[in-house]
Image (cartoon, rainbow, N blue to C red; front, side, top):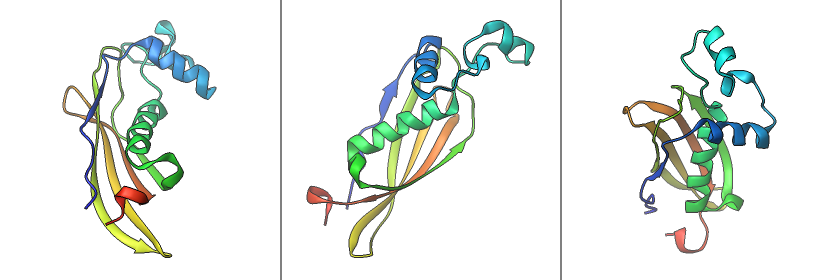
Length: 134
C-alpha cells in the first residue's frame, strides 16, 4: 500500500508570499496585496489567492507521487489564509486500483491553518510507477 509522506509545514506566511504567487500566476487582484482595497471590501487585511494554497498541495503531492503521474486534480476552497498563518499540507490514500491497465491511487490532500480549519481540500488521481506499484 502507498503511504503518504510526513506533513509539510509552510509559514508563517506573509503578504510577500501572496504577491510572489500573484506575479507568477498573473492574478493581480488588489484584494490580495492592497491594505486599503481589502479593508474597503470588508476584510481586515489582504488574504492569499486560494490557488496559492492549492499549489502548495500540488507541490506536496507531486514530490510524493511525481508530476508526470497526475491524472486529475479537483479543488475545494474552504477558508481564507491570512498573513501570519502557518499552513500544514498533508495527504492520505483513499483508494488504490487498476484502470486502463495502469496502477492508480486516489489521494485526498488538505491544507490546514494553525487554527485547525481547512483552507483547501484536493482530491487527485495519480498513476503509480516504479517503487509505488504493489
